[in-house]
Amino acid sequence: MKFELTYPEPLRTRAVHKGNGQVLLSDAPKDNGGLGEAFSPTDLVAVGLASCIMTILGLRAASRDLRILGMTAETEKKMSPNPRRVGRIAVGLTVRLEGGTEADQNWLREEALACPVALSLHPDLRQDIRIEFA
Image (cartoon, rainbow, N blue to C red; front, side, top):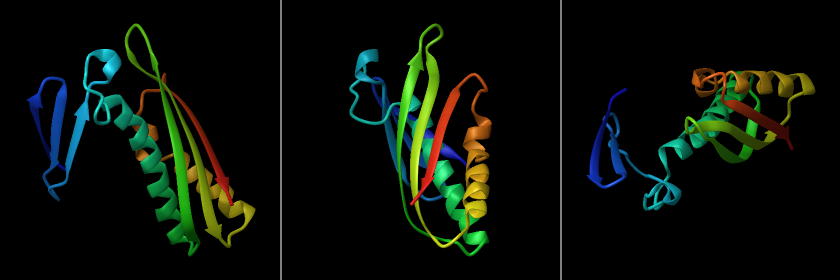
């Protein structure tokens, strides 16, 4: 997939998804001299991880005819200094699942933790993932 990015104003980027035309803005955070009016690039890393986990859960549940009635997630990003980088991402996810056994839930957890974003992140980045089924 390809994306086109521009720098329309200081410390802001505008990304266009070349496949579907969707637009995404990012800003440097206020504590780094930016406007903080949009997600920062490092915010998008945390959101990307949570979104990927949710997507994989949906795909894997469907492959076993398990019905997800809803999902909610909260994610938190903690920065580390020297070098400034994302040091920790915590994701708390609640899945409303219709049917399924405890074995199904454990399998879904394992599959979710192996999502492409999780596997792509540097091993020094601490990932604290909690998945609960309601």
